[in-house]
Length: 468
Ligand SMILES: [Zn+2]
Image (tube, rainbow, N blue to C red; front, side):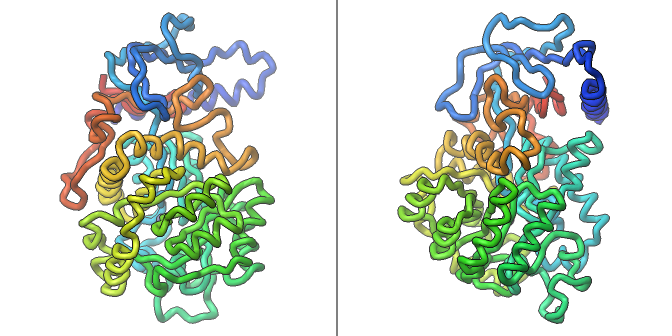
């Protein structure tokens, strides 16, 4: 705890330095801090093997150079990696920091704004201390927590928020009770709407208004619900929720902001319709096949899929366990999605990590660890690690040169000019996924406090953990 305070104060000091530099024309008066990490084998986010032993020089929040005998400042801080693996910080491609509750109904009915805020800040810190230095939020939160993290108030990953989920009445984004009167779609009777977590938008004009509102509130991309889901109440997963015209409305607004649309889509019909109408990232995409793979390449599209949908433990998720309708949906979905893993291995789409946890911090730790394990088990460590780093890094940059808050360099790779978001781990994650937290167990996994084999966690040149 003590070191964390020091780290945060260092982060704040850096902010102070940045402000001072921007106010002064003689910025040379302010030396930029350097950290030299020596004696590490690098996994750069894409390669199939580790590099030979090298040194990495970090200056400010970026990686300055990589090699041997690097020229450094007199007051450089040195970390001896002792031959360990240096790799990019992990990127959550599809998470929900603000979704704190045991189910959508629990969030809607029992969690007020202060509990949501406090729990989401706690969850952000847990994510960072598990090695996630960036986080694409797939709906349910605006930019408040992100701003608090970026200014050093609380510790957490870089966040790309999608703002409120946008979906039609009765969709996967509709958290309301069955008894909610229909004149209050976006009104004060829906807690999810009041908290800016979700918005019901039917038709082109309503979708455009919701999309613009999200961008105005600081979203970096949009999230729409173009098909049904499993954990929600009113929609079969096969539901074809948004028409082509409605999808295009969201894409048109995103295009105008130089950003993109991510869409929750399970069925092939919905996935194809999304891709044909300009959606850039398919969320879940369980009916992925050769036709979809071809169209994704043509459109430069990405996909994120939660592998725990294929876990034997799926039925133990509270939202599914507590709802017979959701349990029935989950069973039918698992039957319909049998070719997914085979097809991903065959067509190798641009797939980013997706733990998709709706829940409290401790349960999301277990779900994420299990998700990492399943990704590696189904697709191999190299593919899983790319989905956690370089592929997800490319994907978040789709938010465009204007809206991307972290525009100074790439994320998810180790190279000169990239953000200094790095992990130092014991062992080789290309051979052993447990060194970054992968766990075969899910609900029965013991509670953990950090990951012992993750020795250093650095984000933007600031060290948040160092047990060397
Ligand atoms: Zn999700």
